[in-house]
Length: 487
Image 1 (cartoon, helix red, strand yellow):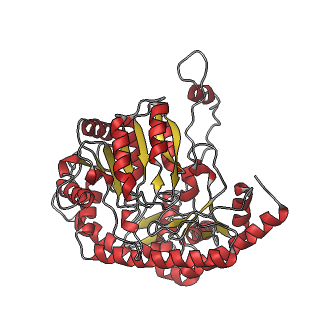
Image 2 (image 1 turned 90 degrees about the horizontal axis):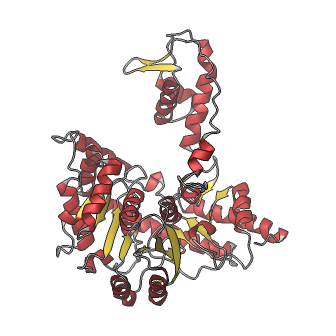
Image 3 (image 1 turned 60 degrees about the vertical axis):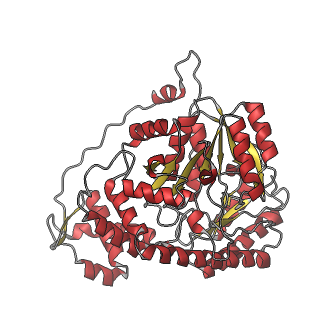
């Protein structure tokens, strides 16, 4: 049973049994609950915390958990929120203009599937791959640092900015600490960058396909995403130049390394060309270097970030520790040079003030510990094994799914479905068969050229679960193909 479901089930069981105890009465000890319900101490602790948050129990450190004193509850009066519909849709002009923020593409990879469903739609490392002990030790040490709970510098801790500057620009000083801002995760950094670089209503060039979360950011900021096709070698420079000329855009957002979702790496001969084209257009390149630390064990030497080869301030670089650690370890760097840096800093301060200092201190402790390179090596080997397991399982059980590119980094594959396959029908059938997959449609800002799935191999428990998940996907494909459901 997955922990998130067992916590809810235990909390519900304890909730039903509370009437056995008088107000102030003591509940069984954690050890008794662990033995009785055959769950972990962590599950017991979280279930009790849930009941405490609901006001049903009171926990006293060292003494246990007690039923809370009962209080008469009055039903809240029903309100009328219908007025909000007009307010949220109006833009201040005479005619209401619909405005909305569509988070569907982001929620696909964030939503937890039902218990027993294999998670091929996840966007983060499975807990077994996360450096939980190292993060816990780093956080503990960080909390004891002098001044750890004080206000940090607005731009971030100098030592952490220096570490990120070296990791982006290399030891030669191509990027300096003064050109780095610490932000709360890559999503926050991308939001800051797009707000700084483009006014509402402006076009922004994006790779096609691309990360749905970035499309959601752009649209929420009132920007118009304009697709530029990607092939096995990354974005196509000739089409990028055409898009700049046709739209007058001043921003291009890209993932040159292990692009999401295709896994493509921008070819060496295209790297300088992309920078030259953007510079000629007077435009910025937002480089989302999101999985550099999730390279596979068999990968060739990685190219440097575009930011390390850009003396003119064309590139605004984003890189995060989150993908290589935990979804809750939201520490990211936003690097830029020139006048744009002050605008980025101003927006960051207005939006979030700063990243909590204990988290920044913990990041410093983590990346400076011997556990950090060990963790990266272990993840590198495990991701290769999982990628190979999924590739082999797809070839055996689903040979009709085309897989033209097998990446040497990242955490997912991007198979193309047979011509005319209905992605929505297949996604629903897969969930019924017990495997959650991500449809390809949200990755396109315009009409997609074909149907795809994105299959993650990082969020599952291991290679055995990957093989079983592909078997379940075979069942779903048989159902959809048999019924002849086409787009």
